[in-house]
Image (cartoon, rainbow, N blue to C red; front, side, top):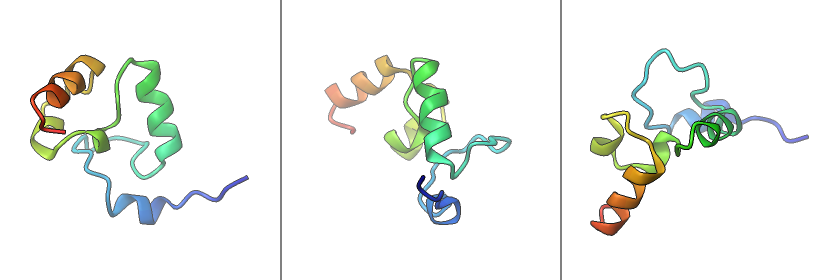
Length: 68
């Protein structure tokens, strides 16, 4: 079993949802968002993440507009 590198992960986590219990625990974050048909904050540019629309569709629009 791998050891979680939460403190190291937090340095690059751009999630702006402050009460998030999954911050820095990437495996839990990814599992949660995929179950919701979303991608985690780290997949989005800072301004796009701040709107909390982490849907696959939003990500696809950002890719099409070459923002990701």
